[in-house]
Length: 134
Image (tube, rainbow, N blue to C red; front, top):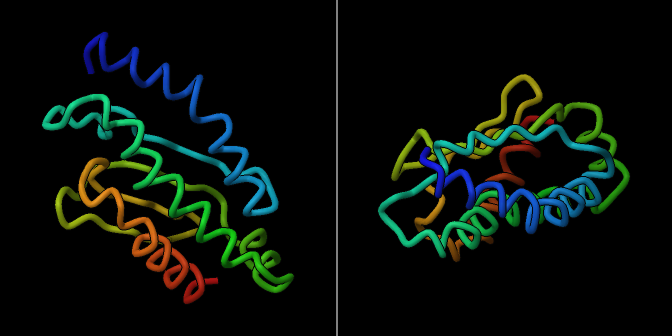
């Protein structure tokens, strides 16, 4: 990751991430541990102006929406709070992407700037995965 990439990550962390993280925590009902593998999220194939949109739509928004859906009742809130330890955002799986849940860790492994607008589909995948594991 070069200096320009580091600046974009820093800008996102400072300007966008606080409200997204707050929304995630509010949706879950507790402070969710978050591990972002920033270097893997840098997509040099697309204009860097799309990175913020991609990071938001591919990682944050579907996760927030999924937590809201799961925590829509007390049973869901209790199950999520009892089992979820952290969330990982990364891009190692490439085009196929992967969403997994193991040992209390939800991992969203997707390309950050591919199919950005399929937020609902990713949210449904996260909900289905979590509900079958909680």
